[in-house]
Every structure is written in C-alpha cells, then in structure tokens.
Length: 111
Image 1: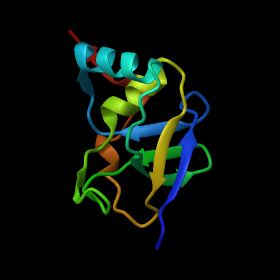
Image 2: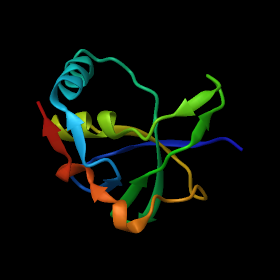
Image 3: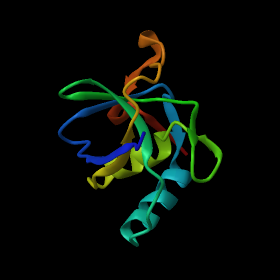
Image 4: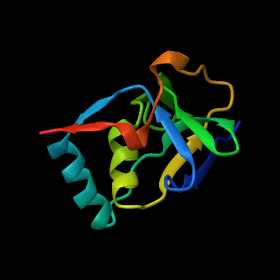
C-alpha cells in the first residue's frame, strides 16, 4: 500500500507530540536548513480529527530501511517559521499515551 504524503500547516491544525523539551541549537540548525530549502523525510502522523494530528513513533521507512524518529525537531522548526510540514499519514499506527501528548506549540526550548 502506498503511503499518503501531504503538508500540514501547523498554524491551522494542532499537532501533538510526547517530547516536552527540545534544544535550541538543534532547532536553530533545522530552521536554517528549512530556510535554505533543504528537503526532509516526511514526519509520520495519525489523524485524530479534522483539526488534530499526532506524531507517531516506531514507523519503519521502507525505502531507507530504518526507523523514523518521532519528528519533534522537524515539526517544531517548521512551526516556528510557519512553513508547512511534510507528513506521511499512518491511520492505523498506535498513538502515544493520551496523558503524555502535548501540542508542538507548547514544546519548551532549552539552551
């Protein structure tokens, strides 16, 4: 089955993750790369409702044969500079525990 790739405007929908803190330097480097036009692998997500998606984990990339990370760094960097995030829909993939999910917009940047 072919995966469905699409772009999420993170200022119009809520994207949930489970990692509450990320490092400023990593996000800053990603922002620079996005602004330079670098392409990234799609981030695996599952749709919860029309305005809410969640990152998922443990998804294996078929082409590159490795596990795709959760996508928190890429999602936060795209959110910060208001650039749509390339995603891949995984409608049947398990969601992280509901109590651990937080909006990407609420991730704390640590210096």
